[in-house]
Image (cartoon, rainbow, N blue to C red; front, side, top):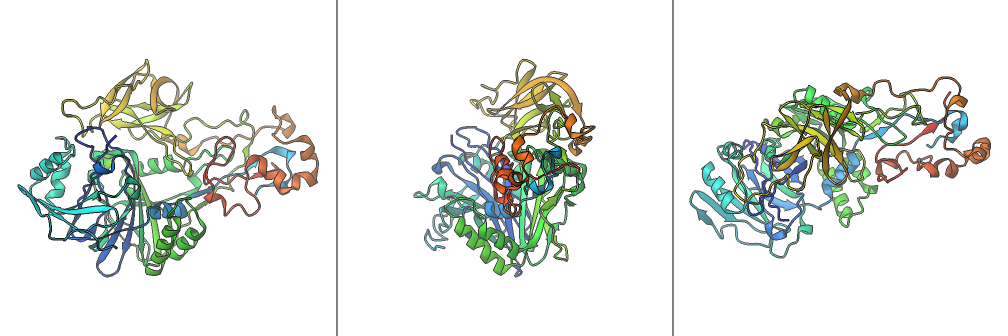
Length: 565
């Protein structure tokens, strides 16, 4: 499958810019979904801002193409591919969940604790009507071009003529950016470069403040798309035109038995409550702290050491780092977020200690997980339990779409579902011969598949909810009970059994001999290994552990047990 990625974005000449929206390839007519934006801004203090933009691309090297507006000729470079992933890892939120209550079977002491190669700047100027294309020197694996046009229609025609699919619904997005007087930086892979050579592009502009041109991202954004912004400066930053939210530990919930938590669904709900235009400050601290964390963190990639070195160099240039996250639907991308200093360097901890919340009784029969405890369907629907699993019951005018499940784990995300408006469709008018997204996709007996933004969505019958299935599909299943978003606060959880521990109907999963023998139970290996709990000093190491299958820990949740009193 060939995917051509074109990122177009608008900003004022005084703002630093990053990425924008993806377009599908005009030859294949296959939609491109942008699931996440990850950007590092460096405020240089000399009237310039440097944007590091992560480019995720899967497809044919010859088909790769990427376009972003620039206020003037930028200074270009690349950084190690794993740089932003490493920065994400060392600043990711961590939840310390409540303790597991095993009853009297366990004693308190058993708790587990530049190159200059390339063409001439002035060479290969290509005038195509009102579009001017100038070749720039090669940077890393990229062959860059500077593209200029004052005519939105001419640019749209040029994009269509050069392999991009620009539908009539996309034209208004492009027109506003062209009318802003921007030039365009286009990147293609050099003839001898492979897709595996793609690295984050580094662009330095004359700018007063960082800005993410999010509006055009709407042409290909997945519902609840995560926008992750890192700002390296000499003080803390926040958005100046989006609301700033903090993580409230009292609202966070986590089940230490299985890793369930409400972190990202709760974030989406709180952002919607703030009118959709809001960023959450997830972490803020010195760049030295980030560099020290990165020094021993490992992504198990071949360029991990280079990424660590780059962050160490960043720590020598800038003193403070802020991590801000938003979650947005395409129809909510109507304003480009701008960022500025807050006038202080107050730190924000990424560790959220929930250990003062009630212990969670180990027995699932006595204390089952709540339905709809980690699914937010958006403002266009509500979470519903079914006989199979939780799903989304979408309101009139909305349909269910499969999305990636947000997770705190380093493991691969599973599937989730969200309700999207039928009125927002940038691929409503497709050329003859375009593939039908519903071919081979079924919503089951009680639902209808529709094509929306080049993707299949499910319109379920009344009384049915769309449930995500393994294998990347949805099915409309009969609703057992519907819940409002307040269910994300886990009401009436956990449940503590009445009476003595002996009244429990199921024995805890502890060997009788070991439980009776204090010496055996106190042994660190016996007390922790079977359940993958952390060792005595494992609390600081756990955030680097990957989630495993079966009974292993989930990502950044720390398992702990103690005796119920």
